[in-house]
Image 1 (cartoon, rainbow, N blue to C red):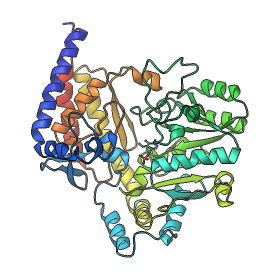
Image 2 (image 1 turned 90 degrees about the horizontal axis):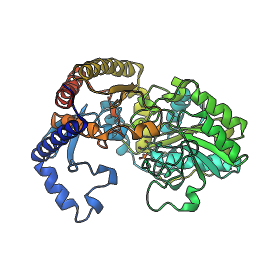
Image 3 (image 1 turned 30 degrees about the vertical axis):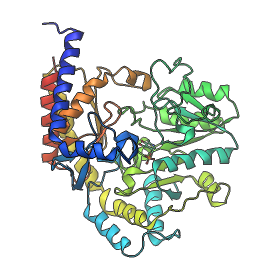
Length: 456
Ligand SMILES: Cc1ncc(COP(=O)(O)O)c(C=O)c1O
């Protein structure tokens, strides 16, 4: 029997409508809060990306691998707070470190012993000697961009179409542009990612394609002597998961250095979720700068910039002033130290890899059994299902992926007690060090039911 596109469309729409009804029925407490919040919280949420469809979910608490909504619903948390939750919730080592520090003072704007210990851990893990701290991924990439410009005395930066580096002006360009706006693949348009980004700043950001050394070479030649550096997610993780092809990152470093420009890996998402020393160690390509946040902080606001003696030495010598009232905050430093010493351990990475092997095998089985056009993509503690036959290599391929499958999957998981990150095909799940086999069985069981419903 041949299934037509319009039959598939109707089936998907009916499934999404039914799952959204179940979702809303299960969460009257969230609906009430959404109503009340709208009066004084702009848009009824604390960040615009908390507006999930069909309604935001209010949480009461988290414990271990689980979170609980205000209606008493329990979820295996694979949202992970947009990738920050590698430690899971209330990890004993993080709780102990934070409780100890909170009673001894939460803010001095002077360094503490933990800051030295954390910098030593990061230097050992990433192989980059000099570090500074800040309070978010946005701050980290903003400082990295400033520093590349300050160090080289040049204004232009290269950025990959479809990469997200936080919400400061220089990188709020071509984050998730519409298909109609992207322009020719050989020379992508620089598209403002939100309102409020001045054209004059957007023009300083040159857009290139992921996994395409040719586009970087063309940009460097077209703007010879003007490019300060390139910032890149070494594995794209704001367009599902798109790994770099063999030789791409090494090729970038060679090209950029040949043109007197720097390379910054934005490891805010990859970081500790892809291995003990991030993608820098996995790839064997050491950039001039690395930015970290999310998973290194055990759930506290955090950020870090690391780099070579030469480039971070420019900070040390006062060539660039990297500042912030809360930089090196003692609570954050205590939590980060606990993450380095007791959370992101070799045993934890093995445990996650074992759980992910089960996920990969079960998902592949369900996909084959129900004739879905999809494949799982798993990198370290992160994973997603890409609803396409072929691997996605860049943002242009990603645009072609049908997002309705991801939304339907999100709803099935949610109604089945697993909290995935919202925003469909863009985000990916995170398995924390506290997840166990039972959590994974709940997830793969939901996937099997979803595949049965939407499959051929
Ligand atoms: C790769 C990457 N860089 C930077 C950021 C910004 O981090 P934050 O939200 O902590 O400012 C994000 C956030 O999702 C990110 O994914």
